[in-house]
Length: 157
Image (cartoon, rainbow, N blue to C red; front, top):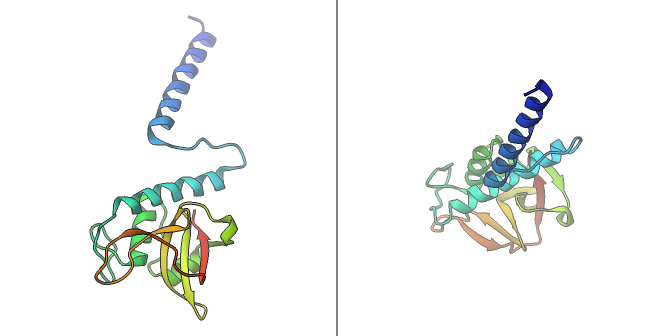
């Protein structure tokens, strides 16, 4: 076997392994120049899946998981599991996120509820006008329709 044949054979095998890894993990391939957006999308998708996996976990003020959450604790935990660190509170997370319009929102983006310019709640956009969130005392993590027009959107990653 020549060196060229050996390298070509190795490249084909590695390509197959990489393709299988991508298929199994659901990873996204990165095109040159698109790495930032692809990274953000991959992080957001994983964070969304983490939040959904916490369905039914009880709300507890100040809790950041893994079994109990407040609203920003759920987003913090979900993005941490996806490999991205967020600040602790909803307002700090809003300040940290790249602000986007409602028409640009995608699954995995953060949804910030505000009143008088102050952010008081956060969830993770799931698509179709719904969010995963940990609403308030006496409730659990759940998927729910966005109930207010007083929302801002942010992208992480």
